[in-house]
Amino acid sequence: MEYDVPFSSNSIRLKGSQWAAAAGLAAALIWLAPAAWRRVEGFAPGPGYRLPYGLSGDYWFFERWCAAAASRCDTLVGGDSVVWGQYVSEDQTLSHQLNALAGSERFANLGLDGLHPAAMAGLLEYHALPIRGKNVILHLNPLWMSSAKHDLKEEEESRINHPELVPQFFPRIPCYRERVSRRIGIAIERNLPFIGWTRHLQIAFFDGMDIPAWTLDHAYRSPIAAVVFAPPPHDASARYPPVSWTKKGLEKQDLPWVDLDTSLQWRFFRRSVEILKRRGNRVVVLVGPFNEHMLEGASRRTFAGIKRGIERWLMETGTDFCAPPALPSELYADASHPLAPGYASIARQLFPKLATSRPGN
Image 1 (cartoon, one colour):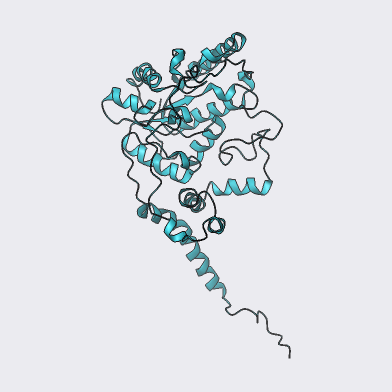
Image 2: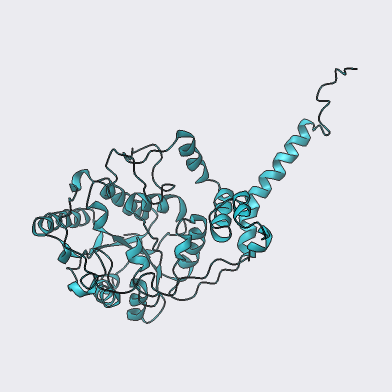
């Protein structure tokens, strides 16, 4: 016998008002869950804290660290792994050296590994809203303009760092090839803290995987037990051995620098400065210092011209900056990362720039 009853296969049917109530409850949970988690997950960063290396792609947690740093320090230091300090312990980084000169905890390390300028602009635009009315030291690593590949200008598809932070549609990044559906998803995720929070859970507790995939690799572990209600421990030690580039046997290079006027990375760095200034911050740009000892003659001369062009723009826009000369050769671990004495030297040259620091200029 057949029954002509609409929706007869459904055990529960909701009226319009019930659907609205269910949608409202779901929206409330999506909005409140990230805020509630902040109370549950302990986070008490100590002096010299830097984001754990494994959380470099956890922008929800970066926002949390950013808010904590902005609440207790008057000067924030942003940039890539040079600021983070790959070859030094957390008590040897640039921010720590500046704090030592200041005699108090005034400087916070907001460095992220692999944060090229295109990603930096996205990080500041969407995930650094607490940075307002502060002094900001923004590091410019010239390495990101040392080739068309680093500058993201190659037409051939290539893997880039932090693809979730770069522009998804405009301006076009030639080497970034992603499905339109994924680009739309990334653009939506930037404005939904709930999705950022779930990504934080995946990165911090499930090896970057969703729970079904994680359970396949950990068949005898409970997903609930994997959540320890505390972020991964910070990285107090150097990530790599602090050995100079000469002792490692690295050779000099003839880098194919891009033209500053057409550089994508330089364009995005300028945008980063503008974002910070628009929010009432006082920006001091730290240019390099790049390991010029590693450059062959022609490449070194080209870099000198690029550096002059950077300084000219900073002066024209009234942006304070510090462009130290190259450190002694033995103070570099590679083309751009200093060793501990190098950070101390940079801090001594940079610190006087901050004596007249006034947010909002």
